[in-house]
Length: 417
Image (tube, rainbow, N blue to C red; front, side, top):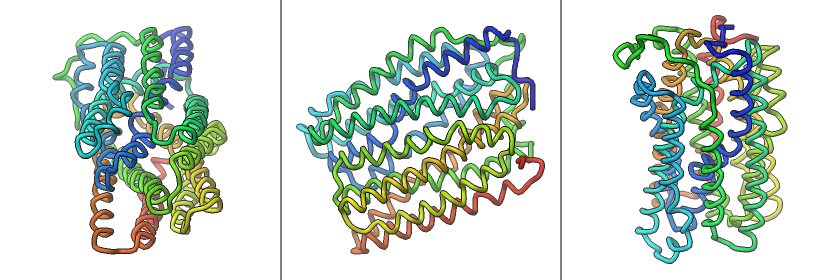
């Protein structure tokens, strides 16, 4: 395990951890409200097709490319300043979606275009802010505690999103299609986060570091890093390509209501809530290899189970909730092991290049998956293919991809356990 202390003293590291834990539920609520399930449901409500839904879900991963110039900027600007700038921009650029009622009144392609533009711009600003998040956190951690810290951190924001989506489910049951207020709550969370981020401690920059000194190729010379990228890219592509269209399948073809899907979305965060801390302990003590194997196999089985959803009704909703819950447990464990592994192989002296390049590369490799899948689905359905067959094939393919993703990890120098 590398030395994670940097130049921060124990009190500063402890303060950093407290501020991170306090701010992250606000930050992730804001992030998910403007990048994940809620925009998908809102765009469906505006009449968007599979290709537009897929494009929206591709914004967040593809725009991670903005982390590269932001990483270079960290050689000249404090990371905390860049984090705040990105967060403030995301809040400003997401504001139009609070007027969702006006977009519904406008209707047609114009409403969809405005919503998509706001979502894209917000995702871009969030990508800039996220560039420095892991590099800042890296220097707050204590040796041997990575899994448990991220278990606690992610448990907090999962709990916040459960509360959010339970309230959203109730709101949509009473006010169908009224997404403006829900975007407003997420927007307020993003605004409140700014005050906490402004107090984060930051390690002093080392003398002589500048943009020209950044070697982009260095992380890729590490065999472990290359294998890590291959595995995480495949697994992430499977998740990104399956979950958005599971919502489309349930809402448009099986006829479940927005309120039903808000309830199903709660299961995505409940699974993480009940399992994240336990996964952190397992990853720290038993090793990441065990976690990767268990979560990949179980996640593939649950993804394949999505193909069994056949008709609207309480039974279908109950099965969807159960499958989403299992998928969330598996994703939570996989992502804790992912972070644990990445922090272990990152060089202690200057971890930022590897941490940022990992995210950019993985997202670049799989970021187009939702959009391309959306295009294929839309074309297949337009030609008269049965929706059950089309979506069933998608879920089967994504299940297989999760198993294939284990292959690059079969390297004793990479995983433990």
